[in-house]
Image (cartoon, rainbow, N blue to C red):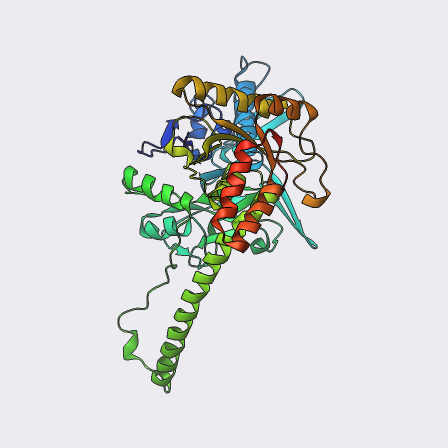
Length: 448
């Protein structure tokens, strides 16, 4: 099964996007990436609650027949789902950066219980670096500003290409401000600013997840925006835009300008060559470091993709999840045999029976449907924050007994890392074939 994307109140016309409204869509945590336009969240109350004399909308829980509590619980539930998607699933949330809008104050006899607005759906995070502190969103303001002066930062980031593609189609409606004047660059990735340096697009880390705030677009075909957003998820980057000089400016030279321009042009050529070489080396380094990710990551976008790449080093054909219809973490194909895998990561406890049962169900189901017997492989990464050499047994005794009875193979990511390292060092196909055969023949724990 491929990746699942949900667009909430954001018109994205593409087969890979499911769509829904804020109130009625399925749980946000059930998807790999969420694209949400919060502009219509205020519709939940502005048509039902009139403004009072001070211009604020208030609902009173004693006589609103549960209206305030229903709205409050809906906002809380969606905020929790976004938090789970970011922190637990390591997913991506793309949200349009808008002002907080007309608030709704939920009141009781004892006073104000809660103040709700568009920003209430965003989960909180506190980041500390040395003596600096970043608290989101309580210490953040989305100040109303409107403009089209969008300047994209020069950096490598998956959404830089998206911002470049529609740079002249953005009309930002708010800017990002930190009340504590913290050094924002220490904690988040700034993607775009306006002409005076206000932040209008950024990426905020939530463990392995990312919350990306971007300004809304206008006059962009939905199909086109969907395609570029999908490419942004894949990680394309481009050079940023700069403010163009007026056409008449060359008519006003200064002494020594031509010589400096020639020297600068020569330096730019050298810089371009060095940047191209640097980008090539960085790409090769990233490709080599992917195998280390299996030792400490947990998310679908990090651990799962790294494990697939590791098994490819062993000579297995490993299709991407979108290339098959079943909800399998891993499908391995080779002349020696085929296997279905479940990838399990935990923080501090051994991998339990729930992962073994899921593997058993998938192997049995696949064997019944296709009359082809698959090997079961359980890839475990327990106690992932510890040094791999200091980790205890990464699975429970019940899991070991079950896998031995079903002739399933249990392999830790540390053992897989050592095998990959050996094959990359020797570059010997016979070694790769040896390990493929051993994995497919092992019943129980696989050790190098």
